[in-house]
Image 1 (tube, rainbow, N blue to C red):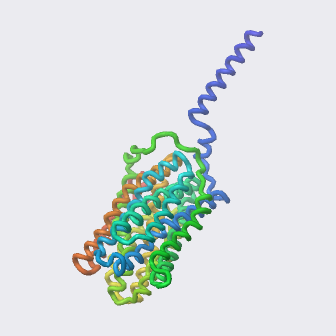
Image 2: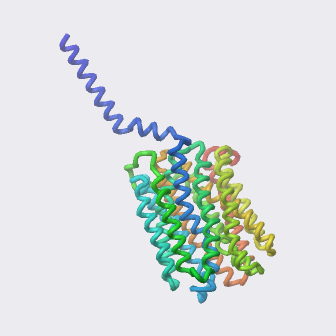
Length: 432
């Protein structure tokens, strides 16, 4: 009898060891967290709205570069060509997307704490921009340092939101990206009023924007928290590029981003070229971004029902057609209508490309890395697009060629989404 009890205890101990090893290899609580998404609640929506605050200050600020473009052409950088000035904004957008290459994987490994030094560096770059005088200084402070700090700040915010939602991910990330639209409304208006105010001038105008960002980024960063435990595996996941769905989404968005920023950078200049007053032209970017607020919310909500790739395809095709029609808008009224329509459909692209990338990884702890690597590839399109458009303006002295080039490449991206739908396994007509 004692031997039997001893054997039972020994067997029970062995079972405990096996169970403990099993839990260590594949922890139950982590698996449960991975497969069960909150899909709402106070904490989840606090993260989403915190991320919206981050995008208000980062992507929203970039959306105001059209005002800077117009101002630089008549002030500090009046001796530079439009193409040369556009390189500042283009480099900034490039590093915003490219910074995600590190910001995404670092979030997956260390959580949301890395957002603090990134946000601080971004505010510092804005303050340094306020004292810039020459082209290379603007390039270093506003373009390179500002862009990279934005990417390192924005990537954790986007990835954190995606960890709390799956079925409602389109709506949640639409709310998050809508923050950039709101920033794109406020910053152009604030800049256009303050830049031409002789009591403020360029320096204090930019510093006031920096203080606004500082006041908003502190609570926004505090609200962002990772839901899942850190991923301890590789820093990058190059095997992701072997997934056909992932690579085709990146390729499609690459073409979209190559052409999408033309009106953001050149619409005020285009409007002044056709006789609109400088003051009214400075409001066009705000009108565009105001409508993109709805473009990022409504298609995001619909994407949870119809599929993010379906919505992305439709938004890209509509955006491409609008750019091709851009050159026909020559009166104040038609330019304003174009600005509103373009804001809605292009805003949908910015929102839905993030949702589409976030749906690819099987493990939600890889979302930051997948999004970061994808955004890094897309950043080269953001780098090339505006200078190409600037070179076309310099070469031909008008905007017709810009309209044709940008419209065609965005349409190509829209049709390329069909390949991504096919690669998903659900077919071109599937809900995906």
